Amino acid sequence: MRCLGLLSLACALGAVGQPQRPADTFSSSAGPVKITVIRHASLMIEAGGKVIHVDPWSQGNYEGLPKADLILITDIHGDHLDPKTIAQLRQPSTAVIAPEAVAKTVVDAKVIHNGEHTEWGDWKIEAIPMYNLKRGPSAGQLYHEKGRGNGYVLTYGATRFYIAGDTEGVTEMRTLKAIDVAFIPMNLPYTMTPEEAADAVRAFHPKVVYPYHYRNADTQAFAKALDGSGIDVRLRNWYY
Image (cartoon, rainbow, N blue to C red; front, side):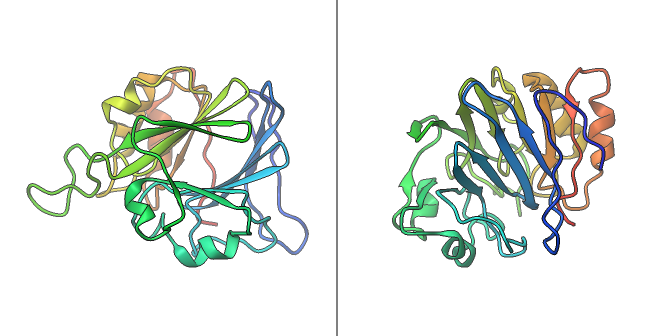
């Protein structure tokens, strides 16, 4: 896999005998941040000797990966909230940060609501609304109601990482500022088309963007829609 450079980047493969997982490392004023692709919406962030697992899911392969110091959960759907995998990755000191709807299942989670901020170690964490504008299972219903789930902006040093969660291109996404790295969903019927996702990304213009949570969506169409934008589009295999 060829890796393009913006910020300080290393493309890593798993150890011999372990699954090959795409992993990029970014520089920040607080030190390097390594992000490893797990599966679908699941990823691992490592910085300052600490490990963050985002939306751990049993369809991902966690063999050989470190346990979590922090688990971030975005929503109540099974591909984001998986109690079995959360238990697998937890240790006695592990913190969990999640929206209120998740805390009904993970009862000791620290709840953060849309628009709120918190801190964990050297990280600043902001909960960003994630919701559908028009798509739902039937008339008058949405797959993701506003206020139920959280996207997150994570700041380490001065570097800002946006994990969108399941969302369409809502105003709260489009008006984000100074995002260095973004993870954006694009699978129907639950979130956006690649073209809709690209339009939203153009609005807030991160330095680097990864399509994730895409299943069978055409990520090349997403990349093509961002041609000429100056945004570094990084296509990784989230379903290896």
